[in-house]
Length: 469
Image (cartoon, rainbow, N blue to C red; front, side, top):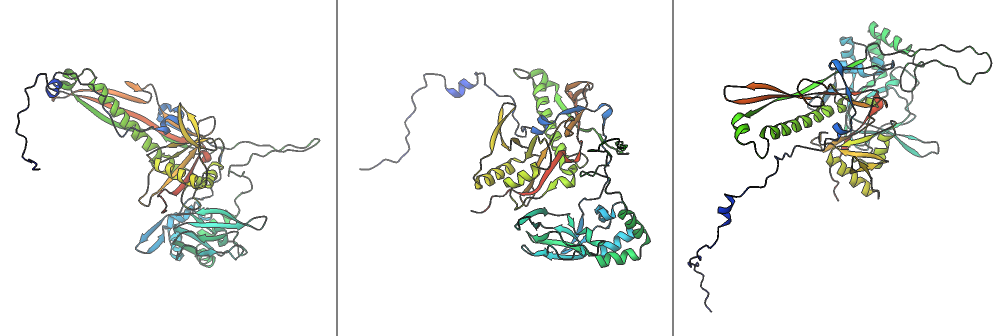
């Protein structure tokens, strides 16, 4: 049988009703309000208690704390050569407050670079500790022996950390832990002999070390705060010790930051196309949403008051093996009381779920403002896409206590602004220009304050990439 493949040239029958294409010209379109992909849950803005900062400044008064200089050390890299920045040596407890650049440069020049490989043992527990180690790059695990003879994981150190400082002054110092490289990396070492050589030729350093040795370290509690003298367990007419609570002489002050933009709407649009939706109102709604997104980004990443940059160094820990395991989450949780919530990038939360599943665990869910969210040990794990992810696919997990009464983290704002549209946000009419443009200045003022150092903890360098199967 022959099949005719020629096109059908038959005419369509005449239309007997109105076509859909023509009908749409007369139909009323059902439409949505303008949508915006950038809008997120903004859990941080919802969970932070907001405190009034009258005068635009909030002062955090704290009990006096002896600063021991346990910060991170920074380095400069020239190809494969790494050098410590001289003034960064002031982050060591021994050199805190010492600012003689010439002497610090001499100490930096005595630091010897050492490249290490994964699995390499850097120091052995019980061996003489005669040098300071400054970690430029890499991860180093510290282990010790427990009371029952088994090996225990003590800590994990990363970029900028250091250990062995006690060996610079104590000739009888011994390593209390075994340090093993978990990744390849680079560190710089300063031997006790080199440190003594510089000190012998620098009177200013000798005087500084002598003052450091005589610091009243015993007159502070386990948090480093000045001791409040008291008596307990006494009998009879025991003479009571007198005490007072000393405060920091120069407390930190947080000034409100600002995010602003100028919204422009043509009068022709507002006049002729204002129904059924208010054009100016929709423009304003999306602009405010973008400002709130920027506000949350700043609360996380701003170098002056952002939580990632202002978390205390003692409250920053490294994961044991890279991915976020239940043990890592517990380590982060146990370092503070009254933790209110975890905060992590959505991809990090996915990595948490994978690791929990690998351990045969399933995170519970809790009801938070009518929404079910994952939780660990009853503490919600909330998503925040403002937490950065590095090109190496690592990120951070934050945990925090919130509220003034709990000595936690608080958000700062000022309400009662002129032309206030929302609490802490104003929309101010700026007039019309010669092009018939209506302008509005949209401003929001905000900041965040960490009332005591242990209010925020950070699990850094969390590996979130999927492991090969």
